[in-house]
Length: 521
Image 1 (cartoon, rainbow, N blue to C red):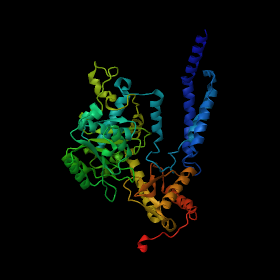
Image 2: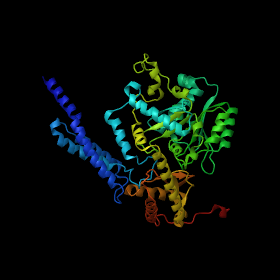
Image 3: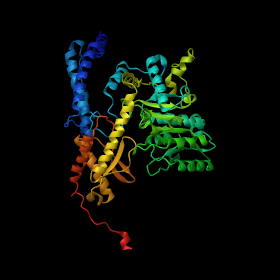
Image 4: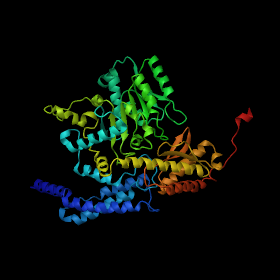
């Protein structure tokens, strides 16, 4: 009897959680809160980052869980549940990082198009997955349609290329390089450390390649020490002549080149490698070319900037993040293969309980065969919805406006005393330094520490969110214009804020005469 009562109580709690009326009321409440939140973001006193110390945030998050109800809350308690939902949702908004604030100019994570989040919510609420076609027939169609459309924009030959969508550029890099490894050295995948290789496998990589490439080399059994970095030119772009020299050196030393990894663009300053020249060499020596275009790939939509990705279509594999310059919520990373035959090269395992031998014609639509993910989330709804609603011109507009805004910031740096740009920006990434005479006179270590501390004060104040970088041993500020609503006025305010906060450090680090060892000798 007790068991029956407990089971009845359990069913009552489940029914309350699944109640459509609760969903309806909560959706209306959330819509109201999101609207108010969005309207507040451009107000001067709205913080970008709601900073609190990690221990404080963790403690408060735990307390909220410990306060969760321990008794039944039936559907009749709907008003109370909505009141609690409102409080919890408001907490998430109040404590979150406001990337939609135009004073967010930090990491390469965008102020995503707000409506994209609503399309993505359909995926979450209905839990759309798609490892096999029958689990997500429409989700599969959406993903493949986007692959066809974006691949055509890149310049791949229709009917000859293919791709997949996965959770992030790091996983896409891993999958693309896994395909390259299996193409060159399939015995590593089957025999592992026992594989008897005729030549030592290596990766030839841009010196500014993303750290996920190093992680991939570790996971793939190639080894991080088998990454050979290709020197960069004065603009931090890969040098084709240096690449060819390295290719010939590897051949003379009996090293097997798994792939050449180029960037479009690299993370440190946003430099685009010369893809046409690199592709020429890879074709000449029959080497797999992998291009990490996670950030810069969408420039192919822009008439103004598509020259930066010229030659991208010649790569054997390309990483292309929609959750960066297409301004879609994370995560939605595309991986393209120029040759459709490579779509199963990364993964060839069988799962009889999933893939139906009675319908072999559907296997090409079972996208779980192409990715490491077994429960593959349908993470293309947001991009599909925005494209269908606004058209592809919006993606060109987003590139044009954010790149142009970075150019405006470059001009401000030139016009404002004591600031210097580290480079001429090619995209929406700008690295710069604050170098008044008093700061430049300090030892490099102290200069670097002041840059770090200024940034820390800025982000903890909530006024702006920017990041730091270290270029050739010297600290710098780094911004990425990932909000198309950021204006020149916001950028001027940032420079003023840096100057103001730097003034507090003038007397903290007294300038002392440094010993000149050349004079002593």
